[in-house]
Length: 59
Image (cartoon, rainbow, N blue to C red):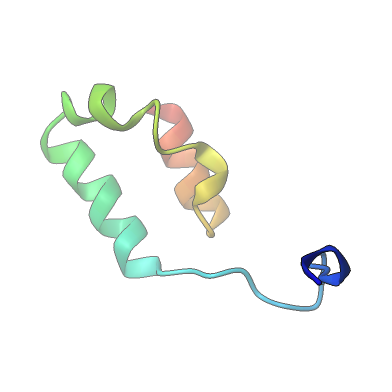
C-alpha cells in the first residue's frame, strides 16, 4: 500500500515558516557560537527562501 504513494508532486508548496527561518538566522547572528551547534543538523536547503539559504550558507 505504501509502495503506491508518490510524494514527488511538483505542484505543491513544501512546508514553510518564514518567521521560524528569520528566528533561526537572528539567533545565530546574536550568538555566533550557535552555528557550530546547528551546522550538522540544519542543512542549507531546509530554508524555503533563497535569501535565507544564502545568508545561512555565508555564516
